[in-house]
Length: 235
Image 1 (cartoon, rainbow, N blue to C red):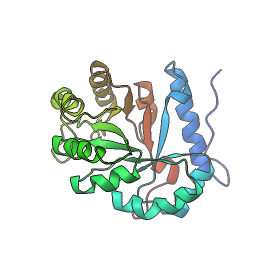
Image 2: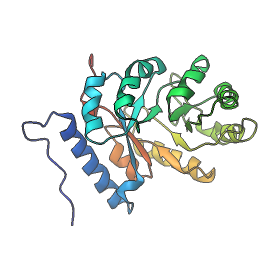
Image 3: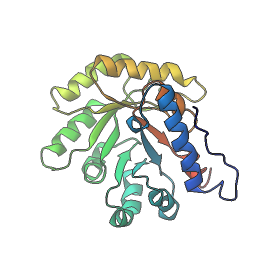
Image 4: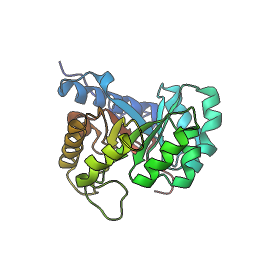
């Protein structure tokens, strides 16, 4: 029996809890359609650009994994929220500068944008003195876009080996952002192939427009923002 997906209709259709209900239901259906359990996919609520009062309804609705783009923005927003919701898991999903590594390690539980040797070395050095060990995802530039961060697909195997070998880093997963306008499925399939041949278990792929496809192609994490919070202020 196919479970109905909640409708947006109703007086609270534009509310964060109602949007979350739709996303959760669609995630669960996509997982089951792919022969997976809904629990095998984690929802990362992308809260970048959202103020604490906009994030709180998602926390009250039970969500605990959130994605932020910038270290400084997260430092401003999350300390007070974490006082009330101590089990929050924060993911850095934006580029990380090497001079922000110490702050990022102190604040985030996962860094999804490891993409270059210098950053890997900086993280390894910080781990020598810090008790914290955020999960690390390598960002792969599957579309080979020159303006976008991420290691190129053909360099991914060597970079994974560099992170694991000389740097001694444990790599939890891979992440990608397909080019705007491209069909996402070839990019997700490529990321999955790289992960499989390197024994990497987690895949962060799929956003508001394509998270269901990401799940069908093996995503363990989907990063959903506008489908939960609506368009960010100023967009």
